[in-house]
Length: 382
Image (cartoon, rainbow, N blue to C red; front, side, top):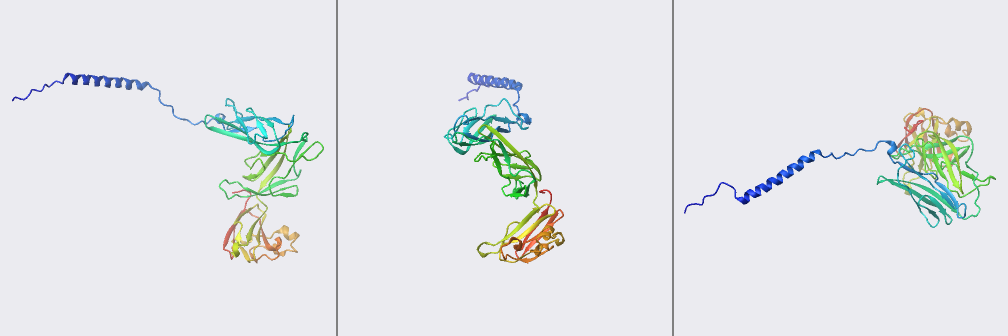
């Protein structure tokens, strides 16, 4: 049988499919050609204008004292958003307010406080969220008394008045670089918590107690304060501390200037070890100002000695020798400290001190403990 002859031309159906495919292809080509006129997707650019950066929300009062009777039961709070320059911002949403204890203090949506019952340390929080996810808040502490005739605040005073006020600081071992305040000295008195007491007085000079107080500093690059008065020193210098309160509609404040400096006196404690083990050492690096003193206090029953790489740098403490040197001649020595131990639990008997006049880093060793440390003499924390 002869084979069937196959036509070289596509069938009608094949030609139709080809035409349809061509039409689809042409439509896609036209569409893609039109896309060349689309605007490009905008790239993200961070805001660098400090006036446009929402950086903080601040309350105009942070320590408020109310009474649960008119006219002392209400107080208006104002929360201000601030930019990176610390200036007020406009055009943002209104902040919200809330109370940590609504049974004692209510707060309206616009910040009006309303005292209901007596209480202390009630938190009123203002909060603002801008640009969808940037949140800042500030907190006021409110005390409420039930007195129907609360005393009227006439003045606020950081005690004691007058004289030089000094914060002696020790370098911090934390990554923050903040210094710990060892103690404060003002008008001949020592205050271990850093801030001297604050007196609130009425017009007769009588003391008003139980008020909420706020502490701030006008020099945060030198030292920073929590609102309760905890101090974190950053570097030596002068710092102005402000104590402030609003009591029954009256706002008063007082300012005290402190000089932040490294201590003139510092020490190393050799303490009894646990479970009759070897003694322990409180610190290996101590910092003082030039001309300052370091005392090694051995409160253990083990004898220890202190030797210096540069014994000539460890001088006699002249002030002690001119005063109590007759009773405690061991403090009139200089150079290496021979073995000594706790005998009478008396500070002067159980310590040995040396004075360091010149800036520098002086290595010492406590034997037989094998402990090595440094005395750093400097005007700065570096």
